[in-house]
Amino acid sequence: MEGFTSERGKKTLRPIEEYNYQRNILKTYSCFIVASKLSECVDREALLSGIQKLMASRKQLRLNVFKDDGTNELYLQQISDCSVDDVVEFKTGSDVVQELSMAHGYCFVTGINRPLWKLIVVNSQWLLLQCDHTLLDGNSAAFFHEELVCLLNNQPIGKDCEEESQLSKFTTPSTRYLIGCLLNEFSPKWLSNWFGKQGKIPFKGKHQYQTDDPSWSISDKPPIKDNEFKTLKHLITIETHEFNKLKSLLKAQSVSFTSFWLYLNITVLSQFTQLSLDCSIPVNLRTLLDERNAKSYGLFVSAVELKLSTRLVSHKSIDWDYVRYIQSHLSPDKLKESAQLVGMLNYVKTKDYLLQKSSKPRTCTLEISNLGLREDYKNTAAHPYLKEIIFSQPNNFTGPYITNDMASTSEQVNILIGAVPECGYFYDSYTSGLEALLNELIRDI
Image (tube, rainbow, N blue to C red; front, side, top):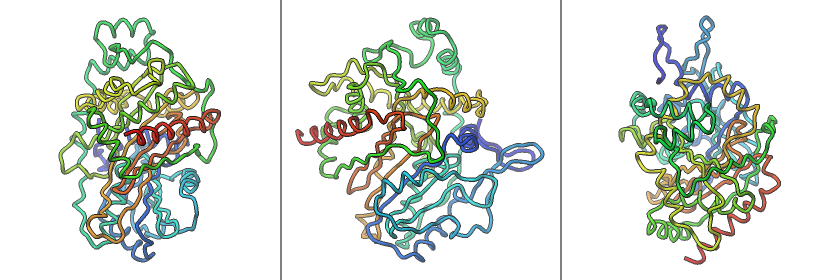
């Protein structure tokens, strides 16, 4: 069920928004960050003016979540008279990865006259956009950077679009999907396996790259919690000319970089475990909607979930059949099916669910999140243009152990490898092995 207007004329939260709101309230999640490096330092007043214009143009940037005193119902409300100075901080720094790590410690406050985002300007050139996940996703944050550059160059931005009703037809779970999820979550293993063999529930059909091996949980203890939400972080950069060589290779094999990068991760992680990996690939649901929604701000995200074998990885050469198997789960039909995962939140008491999840060992091993190639305006004689962009996630106590967050401009691809403290004993070997394997592949093309 999508958000609707209540009898009191207030727009309530969609289930996925309420889920992320509860993560905020329970302090199991802080904020994600999309950062950009401008091609040149920008004047303070010009930047504040551009941000003010962007806030005025995008309603989603002017919202906060409030609770009705009488009914305790959560609803969205536009803030009023919020100064741009309240949402922008200027500072100096030397290491952007360190700045990102520190910035993840910020938790937004709901029910006040401030939006659920904040911009940190480092050295007048790096822009770190902190976002609460309740009302914005990674693509929304990337749109912020793209449109701010337009405004800084006195270029127009498109009309605001907040149409969400189209999502219902994709996010409402089918009966088959609903039964499958319930069986997967609550039934004994022998029963869900039996239904899977009958072909009666989704994503249970056996494939050679799936096994009955138990999942690698890394730790048998609940998440290590602190108030900083920090993860171990390592930045891998691929220059455009190198990435183009790699893309040509992948195109010849009919696979995407996202699928290939997940495969490389499995190859490296198989050195540390022979158990299966529970993997998640976030999906931008705007791709299912009308073209006018292509740049809508909001929460338009689901995920494709996979359980993949580490025992079947070849260390002698690339198993392209394995990569194509991963790619098959990113087909348009699979992306549509993944949208139903969002609709499952209609059947969950989010607060109870999150409290339960955060008190147990994590269930997801690895997340590969790709914001793709962003419009940097370098080829339009813009000054400034977007030189780099980095996506970064916090220590999400109900999320994965490892995140690979990707974003790129026409100059380079940035992949930020994040891992929670429980991964400390193998993290350096993992990141160095992943980077060495990537460099070897590029060198041999």
